Length: 250
Image 1 (cartoon, rainbow, N blue to C red):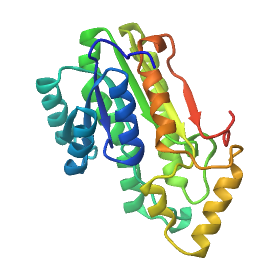
Image 2 (image 1 turned 30 degrees about the vertical axis):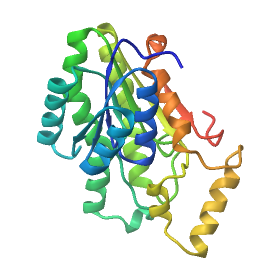
Image 3 (image 1 turned 180 degrees about the vertical axis):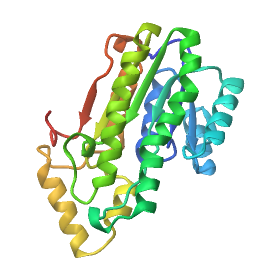
């Protein structure tokens, strides 16, 4: 893996989770100074210690929390040139079983949260005339997903938002791209599926739908993000990359 750059500073939201932690590791290996940002501050500090970075508490649903985290990051590591929006959440529910409260929560975490973080980090990238925005969306946002109507809508919105940032920021030397994992073996997925025979059947169906006949792993996602954050990817912007074992081919 080629280095991202001379001591580039990277902010990763949801950095203590399975996919987020793997992204932090890949960025650290590529030469970044990584800020592991998560509402779980203990988890963030644990991952930060592993990658030699900084653990930062950040709640993407709070503009004040986002602003404070970015301010701390600038003071302790420097201006973030890489922004990876990985924080997210969902529950499997038929659309007609969802309500306003659930809808607001899913949109706040998966769509408005990344918007807040990008809004807070873009000025520094413009100042440097260099930046990499990478959104972690989902194949659900590209082709839909049963039992995930609101989540699919949020991730589809995130893809469109990131493309628009790519258009607006290109003249500043800033790229913006999206990585879409397919079903990935993480604690979040396990929590969504729950336990029991029915859950095992759903999991088995997921695996069989993937041409590579396995779920994704967090370590499958990290290198894709590190590439899009690299100097070598400077002419790639507004793109959406599925990392899903061939589940989605669009």
